[in-house]
Length: 627
Image (cartoon, rainbow, N blue to C red):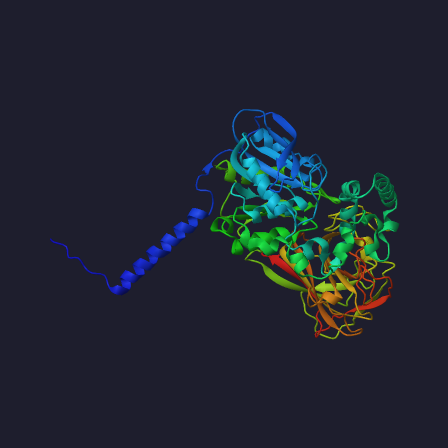
C-alpha cells in the first residue's frame, strides 16, 4: 500500500524547529563545558628527577628584569608549566614552603617561581596589587616559548600569590590555560584590609612591616638606617603586646620604612570606594576567560574570596569556557596550613590529609593541561567542601546549597546555666513572645577583649586570654567577659553549611562602637570551639562608602556578616552565640569617638546594650542542611 505523506501543521513544525534550535544551543554549551579532549585515566605518577635553573632572567615589556627559579623534570621533552609570582622570595614563596615543586615536577610539570617587580632580586619598584597584570602576561608568554614548555601555562599560589593569579587571568595571556587561586580575597576592602569597616589590624600592621619590611628597608633606606630599622623589628617581636597597642593605631612605628608607610596609606582609605575597586579582583570578573579552581579555608582570613569568585565568574566571565568551568574547594584550613591536618587545637585527620591540597590541584591540572580525567573528577559536582564535625570531604552541585533551610536562632534573656558569662543567656528557634530584659555591658578600648583563634593571621597572645595562632580555639576565657546565648544540648546532630548572618538590635552610649558576634560549638565538657564570627563597625551599618555616626541611646539594627562554614553540631552539643565589642589585635580597637578609630588619640568607655524583645528580635540565621 502506498503511504501518504501527511504535511505537519504549522504549529507542530514550529515546535520541531524550536526543539532543534534548543538542542543546537545546548550542544554548543556542552562543547564549552569541560575539556572535550580529556579521557578517563590515572593521575600523573611521580617518575622524574628534578633539575633547577636558578636566578633565570625574565624580561618584561618595559625592559625590567625579574628573577625566577625554574624547577623542571630532568628529562627531554616538553611539559605543561605552573607559574607562581611572589613578593616574598622565590625560595620562601608559599608554594616552595608547601613542597609544590617536589610534588608536581616528578609528575611531569615545570614549576616557575619568580619574584615580583621591585622585590628582592627583581628590578623595578614594588606597588602592591597594582602592577601585576602586564608583568604576569609577559611572564606567562615567556614561559610558553621556553624549550621545556608544551605551550600550556597555569598559575598557582595562595594569599598575595592568589592576587597575582587573578591579575594574570585578567590580562588574558594567550597561553594561560587555567588557574587555581587559593586563600585569597575578591574584595580587598571587605576581605583583606577591613572587615565590617574595622581594620584587619594585626594583619595589616604585620604584613606591611614584618613581611614586606626587610626588603623595603634595604631598598629605601641607607645601610645605617636599615640596620636601625632591623633592630627595631627585633624589639617589636620581643614585646608585641606593647608595640601593637600604640595610639593611634596607624602610628605603628615599624611600618615607617624610609618614605614608605603602607599602613598609613591603608588607614587613609578607611571607606570602600575607587581606591579599593581599582585593585580588587571582583571589579574585573568580566575579563576572566579561563577555567579556575578556587581553594579556600573555613578559617582563612580571606575566606569569602573563594566562593564569591566561584559564583561571580560563572555569571560574569568573559567566555563560556570560563563561566561553565569554575570549581570550588573549601577545606578546614587556616591561612598558613593547607598542608596540615592540625588547625588550631583541632586535628581533622584521618578525614583530612596533608596531601589533599596537592592532589586536588593535580586532578584539576591533569584534566586541563594533560587531558587526563581522573575518576574522581566530576563536571556535575564542581563544589567540594570539608564538613567539620563529621570531618569528611563532600561534593556538591552549587554554593550555597539549594536545599538549605535558613533558620533563625533568637537571643534570649533566660539562663542556660552553661557558663558564668556576663549574662548566660539562652538561644532558641522560638521568637521572643514577651518583652525581654535588654542585656548591657561596658566596652573599654583600653581593656579590649583579646582575640582567640579565628580567621586571622600574624596573631600573638594579647594578655593571658589571647591565643598564639589562628583557627579553632577554646573560647571560654573570652566568653566569660562577654554576653553569651547558648542552646540546650541538641537532641540530634545538626549540619550548618553556608553563609551565617546575625541581626543585632543594639544601642550604645557612644557615637560609634563595634559589634563582634561569634558562633561556637559547645561540647558536653564545656569546651567552646569557634565556628564562625564577624564584626560590624557602627558607623558602617548602612554603607561602606558613606559612614555615619550613631545617636547615643538610639536602637539600631546591625547586620553582622559571619561569613560561612560547614559544620555538624553533634547530639549532646550546644550552639553558642557570643556578643562583645572587640577582638584585639585582630581588628583595630574602636575608640568610641567620632574620629576614625585607626587615627584617634582620644577614647571613651561605652555602655552597649543588646535588645531581645519582640520588636527587636536579635538573632543569628544558620544555614541548616536536612540530614
